[in-house]
Image 1 (tube, rainbow, N blue to C red):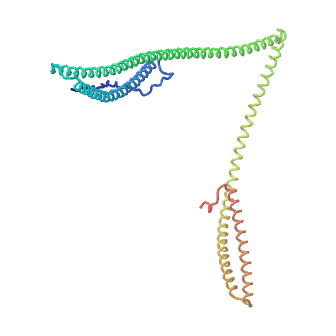
Image 2: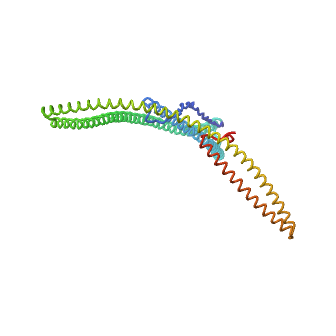
Image 3: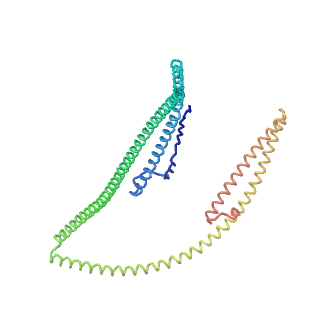
Length: 391
């Protein structure tokens, strides 16, 4: 007997994955975007979401197809085993049956025809087993095919539902955006109108205040004019007042003429005084020149005296330095020597030298004071520093 084996190869053909839509840099809908910009961003978001859903559906389909292919690959093995087992059992049963028939029943006439009938029975049994196996496999494939068809139908319905929901969502968002735009335009229009009206109200209030101030000023001016009109004298009083003013004018004119004459006299006196002042200035200049020459001579003499005194001062300073040095030397010698008449004489000598130094210092201080007094006199007389100081 020939074993018939049905080999089923499952081939899953992948759909070409669609290229993802270009993702823009910013998919954020802001208040400042226009309506067209918002619609464009909404369409891009919708395309991106649909691509993600399609990719997820494709992945789910691939996963399911892989699992189904694995499941379809697994069952044929036990079926073949089962079919082989059933075939072996059937053959074994047929052999047992034939052996029993051969043992119990005698051979009849027409043996070859009997053998042919038995072989035909065996072929019929084998064909029945093969048909049962094929019917079982066909039933399983039909069940899987029905499940696949039902799942495809569910996926299609879910797709249509998702698309419908996406369309509704986009329509709702567009309506909301349109409502927001209209509300913003309305509010901005109203706010601009309110600002304009507020500015107009402020202008009118300022004009009202200005008019009130002007009204107050004009009322006060009217009251003043009325008071002036009431206080205005009569015609007789005005005539008397005019006569008085004319008399005052004549008196003022006579007084002005007298003052002009006095002014002329004063001008003459001023001219005479200016001439006298010029003469006195000339005399004073001569006296001042004589005094200046005498002061200059005195200043030169004092400068000479100052030079002499400064020379003497330097000399006494040098002498004082010498005496100081001698004193230091004598003190050293005194410290070296101890007691005796020579020590007493030296001490007396040191005292005398100290007195001389003090007298020299007093002389130098006196000379310095005299020099300062002379310089002060010189500066007071001429207003300039002395010649030796300039040098």
